[in-house]
Every structure is written in C-alpha cells, then in structure tokens.
Length: 117
Image (cartoon, rainbow, N blue to C red):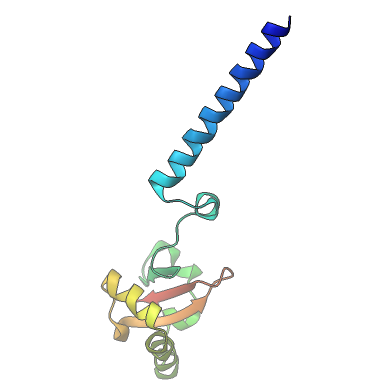
C-alpha cells in the first residue's frame, strides 16, 4: 500500500514538473508576458491607425473631425503627433506622413487612435 502511494506521488510530481517546464519553455520561447497573453502584444506604442474613406462602410463610426476636417482641427491633430516622439515613430513605421493626419483620439487603454487620409 505504501509503495503504491509513494509511486503515485512520484508520478504526480513528475507530471506537474513537466507541465511547469513546458509552460516556462513556452513563455521563454515566445517572449510573451501574462499581460500580452491576455490582452495581446502592443506594437509601436499602442497606436491604432485608421484610414478615413468617406465612401466606406464604416464612415459613420469616424469622428466628425476626421470626416470633415477644418484648418484648426488639422493643426491640432498634427501638433499632437509632432509633440509625441513615440507617435511619430509609430506613424513612420506605417508609412503615414504627419501632414496626412486628420484627427487623433486617446483610447480608454491610453493608446492613440490616429485617423489619416
């Protein structure tokens, strides 16, 4: 009886150790943190770029400043971009010039949503 109990405990410990080793190997190999696993990886400073197409299906979801930009709203949006170096870098990676930015919003998670033409 005691032999069976010791053998069962050894098998359980070995299987738990293998599971932990596999999980640790996965995190190290992928370089993912628990936050990234749950909420996704954030690239380029948590910036989402939206191309504004006035004839597109989603045009009703865009802010009015992006659909009908004025001189003041364009200057304000482009000033927000030029004052934030991480935002400039994120737009440069995507190939978006600063003069094409129509509007910039801050999302609930602190990231930026950039509307551009």
